[in-house]
Amino acid sequence: MKTFQKERTIWEAFFLILKGIAMGAANKVPGVSGGIVALVGGFYEELIYSFQRLNITAFKLFFSGRIRSFWNYINASFLCLLFGGVIVSYFSVSLFLDYALRQDETIVMGAFLGMIMASLFLVIKQVPYWNKTIVAFLITGFLAGLSLSLIKPIAENDSLFFVFFCGIISVSGMTIPGLSGSFLLLILGNYNLLLVDAVNALFSVLSGVVVWDFSALDDPVTSRLVLIMLVFAIGSLFGLVLFSNLIKLVLEKYPNFTLVSIVGFILGTLRLVYPWKEKQFLYNDAGELIRNSVGTPELLNYHYYLPDLTSFNTYVVILAFILGAILLFLLDYYDKKRTS
Image (cartoon, rainbow, N blue to C red; front, side, top):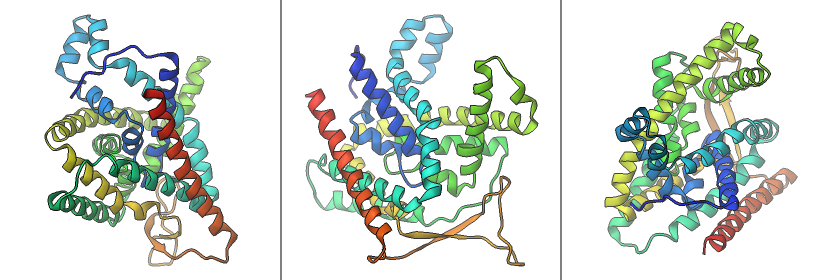
């Protein structure tokens, strides 16, 4: 894997922040993978390179006081710009997405489906040749993605050990295109706890810290959620190092097989962003809706249906699909033109 150390222009830094914002938004939506943004955005290889540099050597450089060497070794300028965008997204674009999903989930999913289909086209173009073995890997990836998408969610669990485990699992969406970290959190039952409640609590605390007000921490629920977010972040960092080293090894030895497996996996999970579906919730024996600790109804499954061609909303969703695909193609075209 090549080295990526280089000076970035102001415009390159700006667009990297925008890519981080897009990645953060993608990670927030169940069924959408931030790794797809990295793959199509042309910085996937550098992302994996930088993650796998977070190792023992990096810690030795840092604690020995060789900060400049540490900074260059982990490609920190790239990581700071990218994750600066991710953080901005979590407190801005992601909040808008939460609102949009509550207002009309079908339109949002239509737009994401369009972007994912366009991404698939661009990724498939990167496969240099096709044969029976590559097709077999494509089918295997598809079956793995489909199997994962059929798993039913479990109950919420705020145990710190389990939260740490969720952190490890959730970052897979950044390192493995097509694998949605937020959907995995949904399966593990902790999506609302970690990506809604804990994020909102952290935002509340940070907003107060800016004006030197720590009163938000006096609330035991907020304090607990901030602790949960800290443990989740540590687990995520551990997961980044673990997955990035595994992916680096696989990409170097089997690049084509890895690429088609990713394509197959994405195809297998497309049902997660299919717009025309209704949520089916859990009920107890008395016929009452079962809710989790924050009052959100427990999801049982989805009921899928064909679009109603007599409904105006159907055509709005189709338009969102087309605009999503066009947006992705335009971003890819501009990025290639800028770097050529």
